[in-house]
Structures are given as structure tokens and as C-alpha cells.
Length: 354
Image (cartoon, rainbow, N blue to C red; front, top):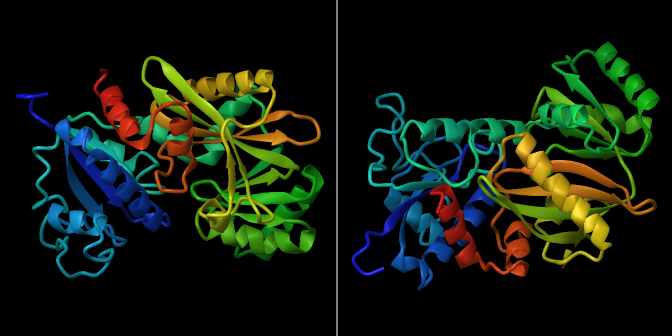
């Protein structure tokens, strides 16, 4: 490595999203991994924090947030005045060699940041605009999976209905009762970390659940709930996709909601205690589903395994999975032979086709 120029990683985190705080936690982990003794020989990191209002802060303040010297800066002090100048003016990003966006949820994971970064003509860690957008949108993702006959739980889609109209809510409620068995899960089409999702066990709870999801996205998915195990698989690669060990999450709450996803008491089992044939099927479906949506770089593919039948159901794909201390994605790859320091370096190499 002597004499070789270090690659500058542009780490983008925070964002105008309901997963803002999760993004900061992920970025802290990745920042520490790039600053390990081995990785510091190859990389240097330039941080770019986007606050909850969508303002980009300079790299000095951004790094201070990552190392904990200052709290997450969500005030107007020290930010760029967007009324006077372009939001990227004053942000020194010209010396960035590779982008590493860690913006979970809307305005990041949905392909927005990928479209912006494309104009810099620099490689980025993760997939492109199309894969990100499709992976974030549950309705489009499920529609494509259905056309390919990939196994999914029964579901309904409601798009742009006016839930302020009581007759509309009544019509949707009747359709849910007629088409699906309780319990059902009501979800906004575009959201992450289970935000905006409700578990509904009877007719009286449907209206409130629809309103909750509608508050995040006017496009809603309603899924039939089954007695399942939560199974997850990591993916990395470009032309060739590699799968991690299969993991299972066991949680104490009634279902895998936001709080349980970041609960220290969850039991993680890697590799999951499942039949080898099922493991093989899960890995094959994980690769097929990512290829179908043009998802590459890295992702986490989530499955349901029905307890009574051992049937596999494809749930969703997360194109920017969490990198927090409690996140499954880095745990899956650690169990597969890549610790967090090796993993972030590998993801950069993949983005460079090395």
C-alpha cells in the first residue's frame, strides 16, 4: 500500500426521513470500521450529514456528529441557506472517490440519493436508481414478484384512496374482510423499520390502521398475517451475487415492530436452525429476487417461514440495510467470514469491480 493514494469515501447519513436516527447509528458503525488500523491504510472518510430538514452540513460538523463530539444537529445554526444558494454549494465533495450512502428510508433508500450522486460520475456503494426505487416500494415490488410467481403471503393493494371519506374507508374495510383472514398487517407502501405498520386482529381496528399507514404514504399494502419465523439473508456482489449465512430473529413482542427491531433482547440465531433444503431455496430466491429488481452491491432479503408448514414466503428486500450494533446485515456477514471492517472494504471493492 506504500505510495498508493488512499481512496476517499464520501459517507452520507441522516436525511429527511423517519429513519434519520437509525441512519446516524449505521453511519457511526461504518465510520469506525473504515478507521480501523487495516482500513486506514487504504481509505479516508469524508462525512456528509443531512439534517432532518434536508440541509447538508459541512464535513467537519458531520464528522463531529459521528464521533459524538456534538449532538445530531437539526437546528438552522451552521447550515446552508437554501433560499440564497444551491444546497450543494459550499459542500466540498470534489475529492470524493467513492460514495457510501447510508440514508435509510425515503429520500435515500428509494433511489433519490443515487440519482443525485450519478451526476458526480463517481462510483457508489450499493445499487442504482431502479433497484433502489423498486426495493423501497412494496406495491411495485410485490407486483413484480407476483408476475414471477415468487411465493408471497396473500395481500391487497389500495392506491390513492381518500381516507377522509368514511364511505371509502367502509369500502376498503369490507374488501379486507372479504379477501383476507385475520390477523392482517396494514403497511404504507414506502417506509422502513416497520414505521407506519399496524397489526390488525379484528374489523374494529382496520380504520385506524389504514389512517396510520395513509399518514406516511397514500399507497397502502394489506397483508395476511401467518404464524411465521423471521428469516433473513444478506446479499453482496455485482455480476455475481453472493449470499450470507441464513439468520433468524426471535423477538419478545407480538410482532416485529420498530421497537423490537432495535431491541437488545432479540435472540439472533446464525445460521438459522432450518433444513438444508430450505436454506438452499431461500438463497436461490434471494438471488432471483435481487436480480429481478436490478438490486446489486449489497442488500438484505427478508423471508417468512410458516411454522406449521415450513413454507417459504418472500417478504421484502432492503437495499440499504442497517449497520447498527444490533443490525442483522453485518451479523450475517460476520457469521459468513467477514467482520465489519472486512465487510465495508469488500463493499467498496465491489463498487469498483475489484
